[in-house]
Image (cartoon, rainbow, N blue to C red; front, side):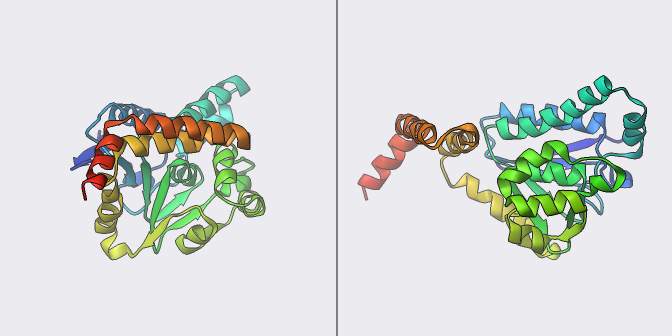
Length: 252
């Protein structure tokens, strides 16, 4: 039986490849578990600067597979709550991982697959990629990703997407703020490496602290955010990267 998730490392980039192409990389318990394990493993590797999640075959990820949907329909509230929290923990882990986690989307990213992409720190997409939160069409709710989507785009755009369930293009996703960059499908792999390679050229400790502070601010008042910023500013000054960077700048 093939592995649900493939891992590879190119220089400072860890690639996590969803490997269920025959199921359009649909999410199941095994794949979610593998993602959580590999993200945790990568988080402990100080040599890495970024993590890229992509998909094997024609699509990034089509959401939950048929077996998972069948399980949902037969489970109690308590069982479904436990199952939902399993995916919630994956989304939270992506934000807790110290370095940037980037979704590289080709083909379709639908339902839970679109949620997975949205949960990442950055999203890259091919010009032919398609996105959507179609859960309402089967009486379901894109519930956990809503907390992230609401922070990424306007309230009215979020309302439209989650209540109408339509598919939309990579260009539209970039325009509203879900996708950071759209690249031609023909050279997507090279563009991913080029874009993500930026993190090899900047301070790792500064990126780690910036990611932590940005997400910490979500639940703070303006004054508390400013205070957290001041503390992070002071802490950054004490790092070796900052001391070396200032010394290099002053020596020019």
